[in-house]
Image (cartoon, rainbow, N blue to C red):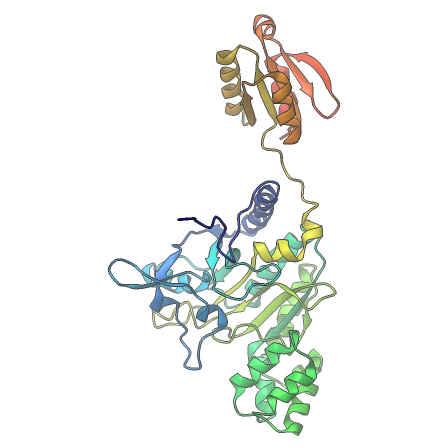
Length: 414
């Protein structure tokens, strides 16, 4: 029987240099998460299917309905996690005394059986932060500030758009349209369809005057909503003002919807500049985390997919400095024991190295192909003199160095 040797559709391997670029990107992301005081957590890939279902009676969001379902040997209904947020509700049920505010981050794999497009795979690395237990706008602003710092370091140009779920609901209610959830679904399609197409679809739920009024309201500035005391306007305005103190300038977009089932207040997206494509998204979801404890626990979070970021910002991320696999190769010339001992001493000093026992020419060819900056020769002469031949592969120059000098030179390359 012939086996088709191929990756499953929607899944992929990552080999150097892409794997090294992903590694470098994760390091940058995690650096800023830690700088803002977020702590790492890890959760299982598999959860009970019941925990992953939507709480709403109006049906599930696409992310929920696209989950992978499976059964174990005991016949239990399980599934692969499609995001991290729903797991936080379980964590707080099992650990009700967690100190608040709880600032967590998680970088890990999630799975969705959904249609494929640029930057979207069925297994993806989600990069999340959440602040649990802080109802103030300060927590919302911190989430935006972290991501802004990350994208700024990566050289990605973006625009921050915010809205407030209460404000959007108030806009729809002011026009007296029934079927608010259906209207929200149609508004959410404005990034993919033309305004005229969305208006035609809305005619199933509203008359022409209501639709025209709705679209006019969604073009209004913050000042209008504040003066007319629309619910949620003050929260959105407070977020914009707080963000300015972080040096970031979000703008109000009253048509921004995001997920249907759990956002309760401010919502936000980072849009790739010059496009309608969202790179990062999040918002406040105050009614989800405490649901198994029968109490409300305020929560806000933001997340993005590593694959989406790399797929949509390929040009910017190709500029990431990809670290070589080691700072030097140690080439043993019939002095294996001494070469191994030297390698272990270098590693004990946090200097990465690769041991090669091949012919010098072949070893140098490997080092050059991998972009390793130095080659270190350990032969009989080097062992006797206790000085090693170090070749700078970028310029091809060699010099004899003591182990102390060697440590100093290689430490600069870390």
